[in-house]
Image 1 (tube, rainbow, N blue to C red):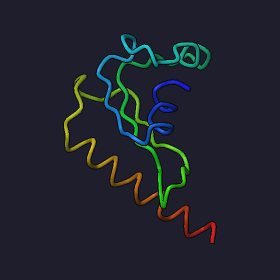
Image 2 (cartoon, helix red, strand yellow; image 1 turned 180 degrees about the vertical axis):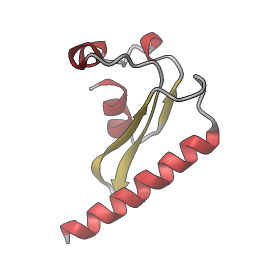
Image 3 (cartoon, helix red, strand yellow; image 1 turned 90 degrees about the horizontal axis):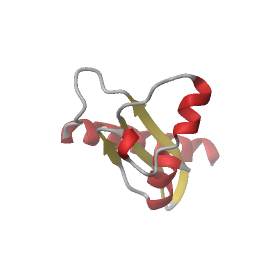
Image 4 (cartoon, rainbow, N blue to C red; image 1 turned 45 degrees about the horizontal axis):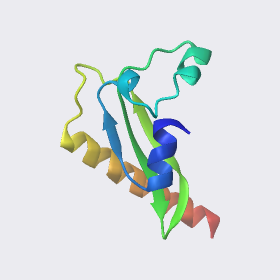
Length: 90
């Protein structure tokens, strides 16, 4: 569900500069935990066609727009995390 669910299901990374304007955003979760989400970046953890989860960062410090380098770093971290998780499973 939500933006992170979309990323995981579709196998894509997303950087959203205003989550309130994104129809995929699950405002109810933010409200339940009492944490205001403004921006979000997420990347799925896929390895060999298997989904292990997703990394999600909320509320960029110092602005609302994520840079392409930030997406690249998150993708790298997600790839490394999925690789690590796949070795634990073996």
